[in-house]
Amino acid sequence: MEWVEAACRQGARKAAACAVLGLSVRTLQRWEQAPSQRDGRLDGNRMPANQLSEAERQQVLAVANQPRYAALPPSQIVPRLADEGRYLESESTFYRVLKAAGQMAHRQRNRPSRPGAKPQALVATRANEIYSWDITYLPTLVRGLFFYLYLMLDIYSRKIVGWQVQERESSEHAAALLAEVCVREGIEAAQVNLHADNGSPMKGATMLAMMQYLGVVPSFSRPAISNDNPYSEALFRTVKYAPPYPDYFASVPDARAYFERFVPWYNEKHRHSGIGFVTPGQRHRGEDQAILARRHQGYELAKAQHPERWSGTTRHWNWIDAVYLNPKKGQSDNAVLAEAV
Image 1: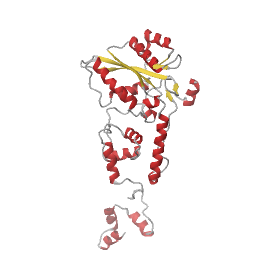
Image 2: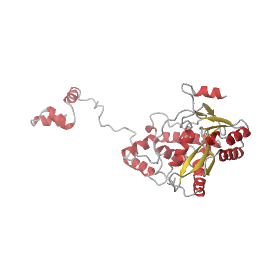
Image 3: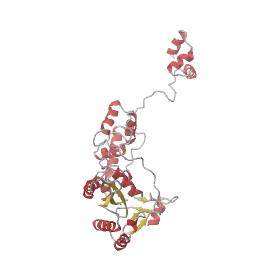
Image 4: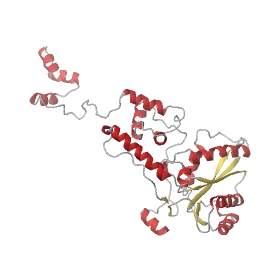
């Protein structure tokens, strides 16, 4: 107000002086009528009380760009820090700081996820209750020639319970893999539902006979729908967009050697977003509930140290008690659970 008044005494027009300051004449008139009131503009430059300092922003960027985190998004970085007993900033704060620094490009090779169609409605409330499996191509040195990766996972824990690399697709290989998994996991008759698509290895006579012999209950995708097996498709995406995944495999032994390293990493190191960012192995063994409880305690301690940085409760490290494959349209999760029981 003093600057505008001084400019007008020197011959300037009030509207031009306000324009230089980024004000409207009407705003200046309101200030003149009540000079004791605070700035009421919605876009006024007021610093929030919980704003990060420049040093804290640089710390977030430094952690996010460490070699061990460089290929991970904040959704994977924050749980790993929590497992170390370290709270730096919230996941949303990580995203805001990275965006402000121009580092919001995808940190992995995968594209944004796409919603998949829903298969037969089933629910898993513990490990070794619903398995999903599929076969995917592995590139070789010869264009048009592929090896085949057989992967079987538990949808409750997301653990890879069995895998093979073969030169061809066959129900014989699939049956051998299923028998191996059932022996290793101690599966009893009628304990497991096995979900798959309608491929020939999945519905071959040898595979169906093995399922009947072991007492495994079959579940199949709808005909002519390629994306009715979302858990296996999501796992294949994780496999093929992992940073060390090669452009091709020179031989079957070469591919098997790679997956002998990948599967332990995935089961025991990878924090899975669908199960509360614990590892599949931890959830399969029933350790996830205690881990999530410890994370919650760590966040409550961080909130007690800096309460001004929380407008409400801390992040919910909730335990996921059931996993669904996939509820029918218009059918609630409770209805699926009741139907399964």
